[in-house]
Length: 246
Image: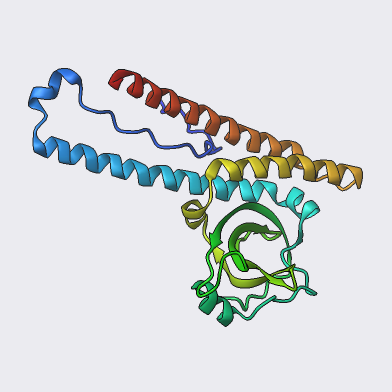
């Protein structure tokens, strides 16, 4: 009696979904409006599948990275740091929305994974006399939670001297899927990779290297390699499309 081959007990690394194939050129005459509708809806579904796959990759890499991340973690905001200006003042000056600020983890150690910023134009004042910048940063806490922290860096001239400071205006926990709405996926993976190498080196110097470092790092590198191959294949496919349309 034939038996079905057993499935591998180890789940494969998360990979990006495969994009739906466009109808063949020779079928163009039969490409009805209904077919067009179904095809483009499937493309939109593929985009969501890709985001879900990326979120799953980030979640798994966080788990694999924790021992090394703990070796490098620094407080997000030192307890001695204070706000340069009241959040309400910043709302009036720049139109910044103040979000949740009273979180228990704001002074805990974490690893910074990514950041973005945008310039703020002051209301009712010359941009030569004062200004600001809204910074949004992504951190990984030592227990694996992902959090975003928003601060406003401000400056103004006082007796021809530039006075600067920053104020916390937002802090909250986020899911991996939310991370992708604000931060670049590849940039996050690069920082995670550097964290793995640097954290492992730090632990080795302290004779505290984790016993499962080989297993975890092997799994980590496998996922990164699969992501790289998948992204290269997608880039090559897009390049071929561009060459065809040129």
